[in-house]
Image (cartoon, rainbow, N blue to C red):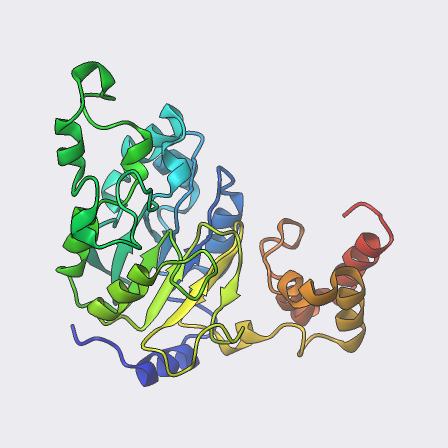
Length: 314
């Protein structure tokens, strides 16, 4: 499949405003209700969870209501190895083969590469040369461990969400790709990593989407990346989602909301007003306040903002 060029992505966005091909979801941390609500509302062809899923039971049971409506894929995050339940709910699920960590697969017409987990200096500090990593692979680490130190006859549960050089290099060799999904952030984020940029450029992707930091960020719009950069990057907040191709209507927010709602949001949240308007909300059926208001629900949004501003209950 020929990698998509930016004009292709723009053309797709213009044609498919109401039904995204892909939706990326920020760290659920056990709360998958917003994922289910968004799938039921927008009916994407496929979704990708960006790690820290922490499903309370096997993932195929948590998402049973939408498995016949969309195709589910995911990468794992660092908290998905916090407990045996966190681990088994993913790797013991019937959706275990939907973890795209370390590989490139076609999803909804895009070639999507996945890198789950985080960098831990005990394994590999990515600020240092890759050949200086303490352990090149999980197998190399396992061979240094006594049998009683192993978890389920392998490395510790915690380090099953660590990024090993072998994982990274395998993904480098698996390209090209259109989209890279990671738990860690690229270097444009204050706590991001240059090696994520290098991986994206090696794969030739146009889009990088990450979770982990609980922030919704369009790095180009925020001035953190140049519009001429080799790829565009987005962070997705806990409980939020990013639709792709982007619906031009989804770009609306503070600027396109009624003036009184803009004023109320600014009074309640200050500089964070646009972030609140553009973040899906449980009380609005998983829609963003901006979208809910545009669809005729401005009175409810106005009531919520008044309650927030005056210390009421929302």
